[in-house]
Length: 355
Image 1: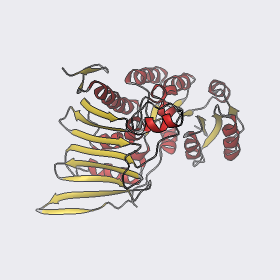
Image 2 (image 1 turned 90 degrees about the vertical axis):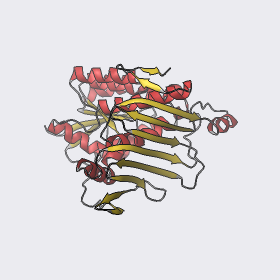
Image 3 (image 1 turned 120 degrees about the vertical axis):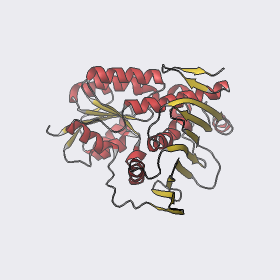
Image 4 (image 1 turned 45 degrees about the vertical axis):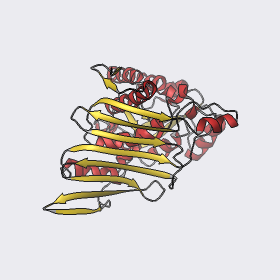
């Protein structure tokens, strides 16, 4: 294959996709699509891309990309990703996969029918800290993982009121589906990607609705979500996600995975987006703790990895089945919160309420 032709649809988060692709010399950024023409022109100039489109369908037809990044509001993921795959492109989709498991399953069916890859941008797997901890898990450093705890708590950082993030019909939910999806994925991945069998969830709407109403804006999603996931192998996971924890740190991200011989920890340093990896382990009667050296881990990023996977004919490490597994948890947590009862998953993708 010569240069891989990449295109991006949506230039909010999509700008990161575009710059990620541009790190490689073996790609050509052949097109950008964005409804906001001012942003489209600005990014076209910055990225030196001439093929600019407000209509993504026209871009797909005109540029015939090999890879398309879909970085749009959640309610648009299904249709746009399907259109891109049916045009012949592999797709890297922003998280979450979709608005529901049912949407995600339709996306999977198209990916299989078209023989295209459908990857999900869950970037913390690709960080040096994430890669280091996964290597320790694979090496058996903590034994079999049996419990996890994960959180992303923001002190006070609502998305812009009136925007799509705060509208359930366009986002699917609040911080659980926005922030929590990252930490849930990381925890489940480090736990060996077990299959969820039941969830219990709670959501709280104490702050955002009032603030939005004071501005005359719509906001109908949660401020904070919490929950518990049980897995088929007997493991469990506790989780929290909030846009307004009103706590000490502006950004508080922590994932802890406990195994039979030790514990692994992934945590942000200070209040930023750099992460450290730590361990605690019982060994020969001694209790050891420490930081994991990250210099030896050559972490990539989702954009460069997607290009490599397409060129080499290997699967993207966060595939549609990973996305569906997480979507199942998200859907179930919201359903549990609404009903006040545990949700038990049956053989189908549809959750059933535990009586």
